[in-house]
Length: 230
Image (cartoon, rainbow, N blue to C red):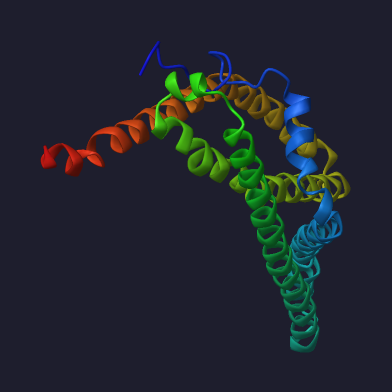
């Protein structure tokens, strides 16, 4: 191979050059499945609301036990809470299945576009990059996008809704305790922000290492049979 092997990734920080453009381009592959994607988000929202509502049912249950309202009151509240959690579980399952379907279709299109782009690249591109590093874009990097679409989006939406609902419930029950929790959350968010600045850099190094490993496997181990022939 001529020239020095190059990395196909961004700068040393591990961050894309244009985060907004990168996100828009990724989500453009979901455009054809926007209705299913929206439905999945609605199901995730239902799951989050059901989780908050189900936990809120603990208060009347405990109050009923303390006040001695009897078994019928307890059973009815437990049945309501169980029904709410059942709706949440069903909605979460449906949302997860829809998101997996959307993500797999989007990744298939990304890989097809990647293959089409690769076919049009000049020979110099392949001379300055290892075969394994290129293949890593089809496997490892595409898999990371799939995980982001399947899990990260759902987790972000669910966490935001759950946090918002829980915050409202806490404000109703105890504004002072809510203030303490919010203060602690701000400290945690600051820590997460600091850690994320370093994690992006190490994530880039991990992906580069995966590409180099794939390159070594493709060019040495898989070529071992050819070497043995001679």
